Length: 166
Image (cartoon, rainbow, N blue to C red; front, side):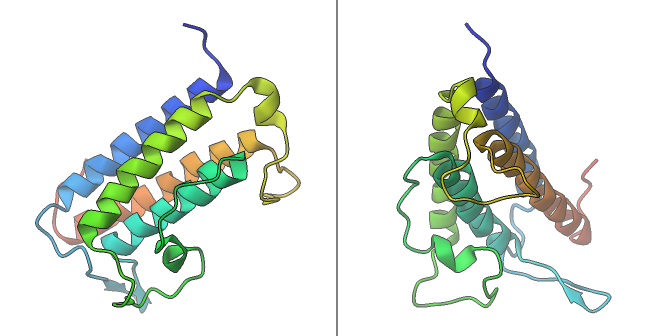
């Protein structure tokens, strides 16, 4: 089997997801809507983090790569800068969020693994830039590191619940 950058990036993203799932497992049975307050700062709830990761992987991991994305009506409620207040009229259940979390990830892995070196080096379809880098390759790398950041939040939340994490 030929090893390509797209396949390597997809594998890295999937390994990051495995770590995220590990910390989610530590939260099983806990209040997924709870926000902690630490030194005057209110944390995101695990529920919000999961829904936000769905939005981010769909937006950065798919749409910026040129894919149409997965059509889920509530995703934009969890975009960067969105209110963390729950919106009961459009709020998905935790089960819906977890289902989308799996679905979007599966689509992203398949799509990313299929991208060629030249496609990865193209500017991304949404024009997002980190510094001067607008490549699809960089968007894939950012998708991995973005999830890693929120995975760390889940780890800290698990610790605040008294869970042994490492």
